[in-house]
Length: 282
Ligand code: GUN
Image (tube, rainbow, N blue to C red; front, side, top):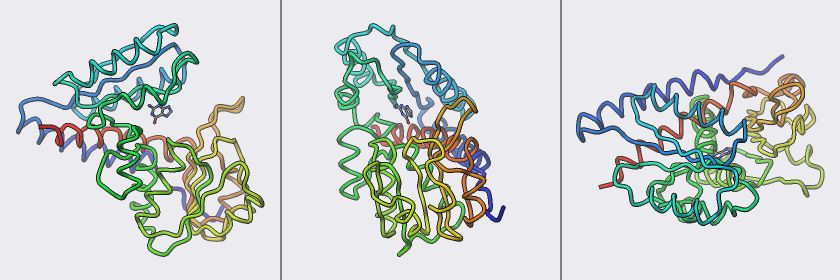
């Protein structure tokens, strides 16, 4: 294996230690700590694990967190009502409605109802629009984590070819915008892209966020490229990324593993966003 393995656990821990210092400073100034509120509708086991980890991370950083677990049969209006109440609650700094939500609920309507100032997921149309316009706002956690990994690795993005595989609102689109803002030349690929591997091979930086286990092999990697695997696919063999790690590591210059790459960064950046949201509120 030629590639350097990018240690998301270590980079995430460093970010979380920085957040803990910021929380202490915030508390000294304001006499309170930031409060993150999470919401899950139903009992998706993966969501339960993700959200539990988010609460643990809040606690370790000295922040408060609260949780609303709603029954699977909750109506869209009931969820909208709760999101509205959290929006006007002066004590709440961050609101996170864990996705997916059950079929009777339109996730776009729910996300759009979140107060943009408390949208620590960075998913509301307001924050997505600010990002699209290159204006300051709350940035989605996973894309922010990808950028933090690239920064930590000292990757020069200015003028670099960056290829993003996947066009989701949660990852593909926002990470493309962030790479563009960093002056990379960005190519977006998706399920209809012809000659996917060939297009991917342009990338000095390759971000895989398609949600298809093992989609990208050695033939998709430019020699020496930095490969960031955002895939978190639950398979019979456990958690797998979108990249065939062993194959790609033989060609790449650096590569993030799954697990232990982008995953720990997502939670770290959620904490960053929650402190930023608390600070920005008056
Ligand atoms: N489900 C999977 N990832 C995420 C995320 O980053 N935010 C929310 N709200 N739900 C998710």
